[in-house]
Length: 183
Image 1 (cartoon, rainbow, N blue to C red):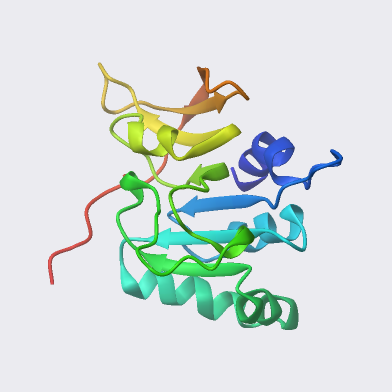
Image 2 (cartoon, rainbow, N blue to C red):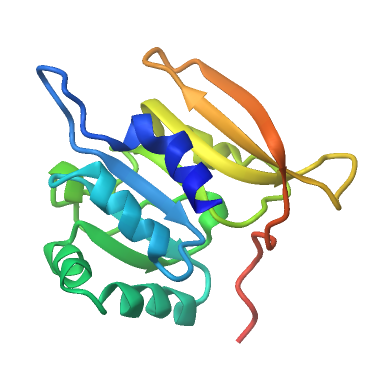
């Protein structure tokens, strides 16, 4: 599934060759071990930022610890190109911190070129679609509306004009995208 996700998002990850390229911004919801987060950062290039979001602090720490095991991973973390955060991934990610500009800015105003969701949502969350840049792509497993025991990968594209197109690809089995456990 990691390969499918990366392949689907690849056109939105690879740095643009246009005369006025923009830094790539990638959101990895349910970042887990940090493996795919690291791959996204490598694909997105030197001026990109990749934010991994987990709803449980221990899972956020796991991703960061795994990435810290290699020199390349440590460099990505220390440069700020990769960050792990705790939050409700169903709402996407926007930072309330002071904006620092460029790709490093986590503000809502910048949006995301690519959003990957690594857990099954009960619906296609509008907040995620609204945070896509123009153009941008969302890769997300979603439970079937009529049969909750079935899940499908959906790809949602937003074009340069903001037009949204949704496409159901194939059946999958993911863990659910849930609330953080009560402490």
